[in-house]
Image (cartoon, rainbow, N blue to C red; front, side):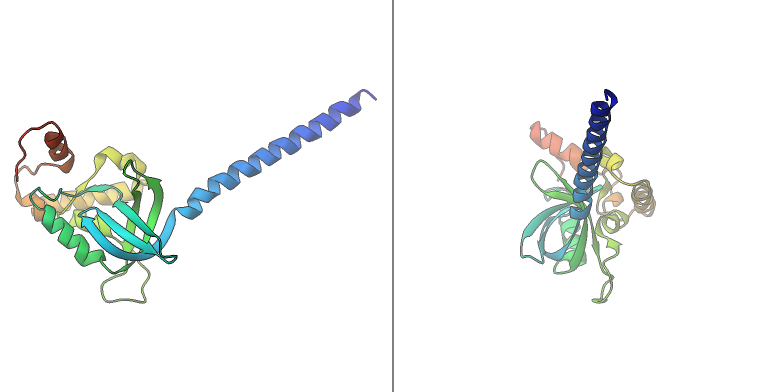
Length: 192
């Protein structure tokens, strides 16, 4: 019976592979489930960062995915913050995204319900609304992390705001926040 140990070994190998596959897919599924979060916006730090209190009373700092809003000291920085407050503060939101940045903020698309509709499901992309209003840039450095549909919507929203000269696009050459931050880090003068 020389073939018998080989058969047993083959079965054990198959079982081990199946177990590995099961564990692999089980671990992959966890971040997908954790990627969605619901809560209420309790604080707005600036034009692209807010804090959400989830149903378990845990607070989460959220960085809006796909956008970069003017910094507080930049032209339109205050208006971007005020717009985010008007859209999202004290609103029930759904956050879609589980990645965190170097500041331990969760990065995600934040959706709110249409104004005045408490029973509606949050469906309005806050970042897209800010871009469309001329109060944020489509953050091209991270566009690869967006779905093709989101990338295209964000591009079109920015192109529309530029064409209409809405918000920061009233300036002929607005300084993107990433350039403004770099200039400040390097000790170069920045335009206020």
